[in-house]
Length: 639
Image (cartoon, rainbow, N blue to C red; front, side, top):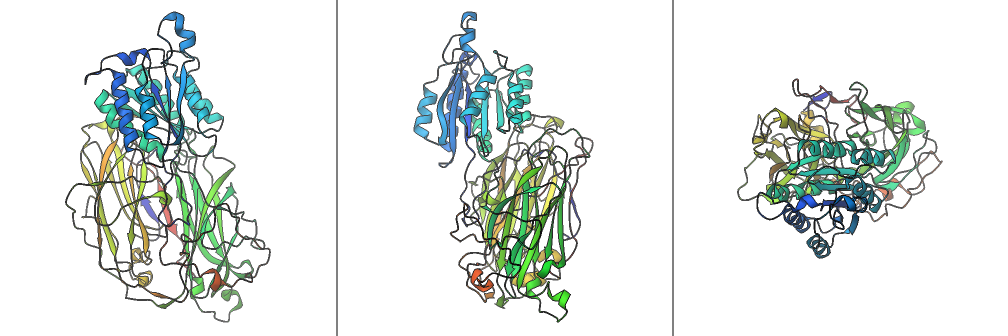
């Protein structure tokens, strides 16, 4: 794929459920989870007989037990229930409509305690959904990502408060709890109410016609609820000019950026080294009804000594920002690999020294905050003494794996992408609108090929029609290849027109390859597979989709290039021990600090774990709105 202007069409409406990002110092990506509260209906109607036998309450308990048994050990799951303390007579309504009980706080999951709490539930009373959402939200942390999974077999019988208005209220108060609703054998009116609750908060609505369906659906929806994105990194404060910019060493940082604002960050790059810099914004889910006012843009520029403009510029643009899109702009800078020429102006952007990377939030979608968190990733790859084998030219051949798939949980960002351990098949389930990431480790000399199978769901037709997409990325966040098509519930494989998406074997010299699309496969480390299932044409239709990711990792690992500096800390600081609460150094001196660049680069490795989240857009004939994400590299790396 061209390194210049790119146009890809993918599904609109990203739910954007993601796991919390890990500190970049943790090389293997320790995944953390959003605190999630299960809210369970125990009203009198749950005594009704389930088509599969037993009561609906029995079926709900079985579904919760299944989820509890499968939930990650590090996840934080609580339980709230309503309808257990009274009967459903008119005389008991006032009390019954206040009958909401917190059975378990959303703390690190205690499977035994949660199971015991569920076993003790007896259905009997009213359905105060609005009140239960308030109580569940109050019991969750008041900052950071958090989710509620609501299971109900009917509409609220106690309003006011109207549950959809409660959902709006939570958003207005800034609590920003994502609510996923499951309708357990509900009628059209109840489905509309539950759908409103979910849509208002950026969550999903899913139907479960009977107990068997609920047992399948609840674990999938709850797993998705745990995948919620939160920006993280070592605190840093960028400046308005280069003169007093903070000096950032390899690692992941967190700052804020305002609309139309530029932020300067200094990076000392040793002679012969390659520098990497990226910035990521994750937009909030907000109401938006202007299709032409939902575009965001993020730029990055490179400056050299004395603030000299090095003509290094990148930008990324994404529409559909209000759906919770994440936008990353990345820059690879090889100015320090170039020898000085004696030209004073030109030499300010050549050779080792201090460079300034300047992101700017330049394109503003409607209804966005005045300021937003921005994740920054800084990498330094040291100079080589031996570049190793020549550039690779042949794509990795795909070999279809045999045997059953291994369960794998994709993450909601590159920071917490689920690890796929080499060749084989891996299974997961996507909710409508989810965009999840997996990662595959490639050593020098190894290549990757993969395909994604979207399984048959039995839910065909226009209502469940959506777009499916997969994209392959390099360790430094650059797209290698992608494919997309429509999906209507029938089994489908991506890519559609070739056996697999693939890399060439990873070689340092690939950065000098004749084919531009092979140049980003020039560093060993984690390569990323993004898999997307777009929202259904009709909200709530279609349901979740099981997927299977078939992976081939081929080639013998070799020693790769020889570096002139030791590599203990990692190209992106992923092996360093710096705390994410530690403030990076900042200096008002425009010259490199007393600590030499070589000493600062002594913690550089040949692998790095980084993230990129591509904006997503949609064109599905007359079904979806036409949207566009496009990326353009205006200058080659360096100067």
